Image 1 (cartoon, rainbow, N blue to C red):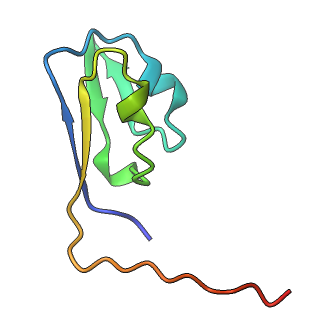
Image 2 (cartoon, rainbow, N blue to C red):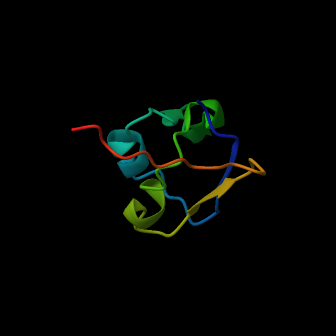
Length: 75
């Protein structure tokens, strides 16, 4: 199941590449000196926000009515 997200990149971004290197879903890439964001790949872990040394990334969940179910293990 994918999440609908909006990822904002602020002008503070200096293309350090940490988000590119550590994103588990390969959301970010640097192409021709610009940060390209593939929002459709985002798994909403929000790991990029605290990772960014310039505080340039914001991830916002757009899905309304999203519910999370927790099930007890059978073991």
